[in-house]
Image (cartoon, helix red, strand yellow):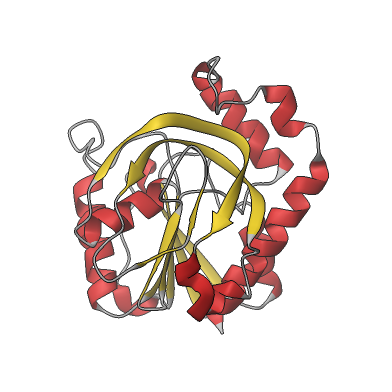
Length: 229
């Protein structure tokens, strides 16, 4: 399968997904939007992955590549492509599907539990995502659930942690692809956001238990299996 990802900053790449996708024989390509790279023809993509980033969905003036990216994502949806959006990528999917993206009441950074929504009882994601699991988070915005989509999960700090649309579009506000190395990069580049707040952990707390990364990376591998099968 031809897998293409859209990357918004140098420090938020595929993480654990790169190893899994290569191991399974998929072809990987990328558009690094922050470098001014061009978007590819849609017919060269089977699965589109839209990564995260510190910018907001509506920051078009500061990041002029956002407008063409949004059009590209909408075109990929209309073309029936499989799409995975993570963090900002999930927010961009929500926007493309007509839902609002807003500031969340709490900034959520670190390891916090998510609870699978009852809507997932009839979905393949019941077998992929546990009823409750700790996920890695780094976000200040949230999104409404688009019309026709199913709510995936919630956390104490953020009601809408993801959605599934037409069983081929998966939006995850949380991170399952984060590795110890990519978490360290996020901390290095976002340390100014580590405020004293109810749902913001310290650098030490985020990096203290490497086994947590192994668990979420295993879950991400199962998500990718579902999207590439």
